[in-house]
Length: 326
Image (tube, one colour):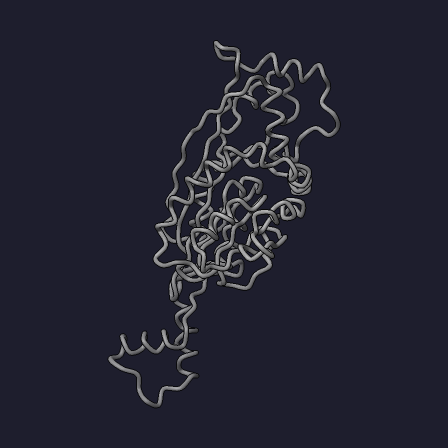
């Protein structure tokens, strides 16, 4: 597992709240990654009825999903209220295109198993521990529902991170991001079925370091590392960092962005599903009757609901023990 680190959730919320009014002036990369992520929508067996866009920002992704599935009920969820206010302009007449909900990804304000598709574009990198996150995402997905997400990998902003380390190695100046393998391990531990991960490396160029820093601030992607130095960054340290940042032959600077993609399905009915309390499997009453018919050649007419409940309890008891926490 990658080196452990912590992120300041309050700083994340504040940064995105401040960026809401200018976010779409700086989100070219986010739009491109979102378009690439939506190319995977063909993985769905049928058109979804309920869709959650987690970390919806100003709502462009939710609007695109609503256009792609005009009959679906789309919910745009974000941690920052100013982002949701900005998302109003893409929500259509009287907000009919999608609903806007403020909420925390680790405590989603929804019942179990309500979404057919959970989509999240460049959001989950702002959570340092993905294990409780995946448990919560799978909780709100219906059995067999699709999880489709993207995130930043650890090579993102590596040039900026190295320049800051050369100028001031006492505190982290750039947020750290989880490795693809850590996300995959957490997804498997939570019970995601057949997760598929991939990554790509993109390079963007800027006129100078100041242009990159202004873009990051406009995106709300400022340093949220819990170990960061508090207070203002001195001009001398900023100048040393800018001098340490490598330049291209034409004088411009390059910035690396590692994009991680992940998709997989929630356990289907009858498959083990992990919860904070352990593993369990759920069945509808009709499915349990079918299971007994398959196993015994037919259910006895006198079979009672007590027998069905006893069978369900036995199934849960026979599940393998939960894997120990990593």
